[in-house]
Length: 305
Image (cartoon, rainbow, N blue to C red; front, side, top):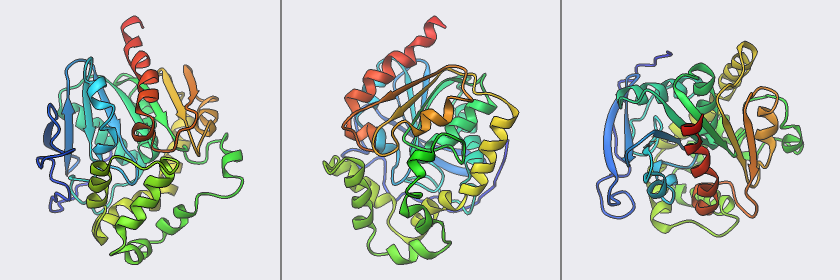
């Protein structure tokens, strides 16, 4: 397991105990130290574990509209990634391999010997690597609206070029300096585009803005983009050494569509692909009912095999 000890002061850009979305009834909040980083995790329900991994510009609040239903039959585990939300700022360790190690260590710390793992956006590569490394730990894998490094299959999506913000975020020190003082407008752009202009719950939006306000919060957020070459190499190494053997569900919407499914098809033994029509990038907030209609049967099939 890769370890990056990062003795950085813990912060609470959004206090999980305050009323509103953060303090929703039935959600338990814990702080768990994994790989030297103090992580905040939201927990709800009992049963087989389901680990939810968010992307940018998200926190655990991304799962607000799906946690209750999932918790009827599962123990839902929704952490803030290192450097995000109420988790500690970390100096490094934002590559997919280290984030996968964070997820593995978190499950161990919570006493879980197996889990279904659900990743979206920047949470997808760590979820994928965890399943590749630990098929004994990952019972089922769900991945959404992301690409897996440079694996073949995303050529059509990338034909016009990578999304503009990838390059902007990748330059060390630039984006956080330019955006300081304008974080809310920037986050709103992603939320509006990710919901096809329909917007998201104002309380969730406010939680995201709080989480990504300040140059240090932005630096942490953009560090995953700066680690993309490392993450891509980790993904290539993983598929060169083995196959994805756990049952996998790839869900597409706008704009990624079926690109992720196409990347997975040659390397996965048990892959199901679905498109959610008329749905933006932030599927759990934009079309939670449609997502649950796919997730619930897939996550419970483990009882039959």
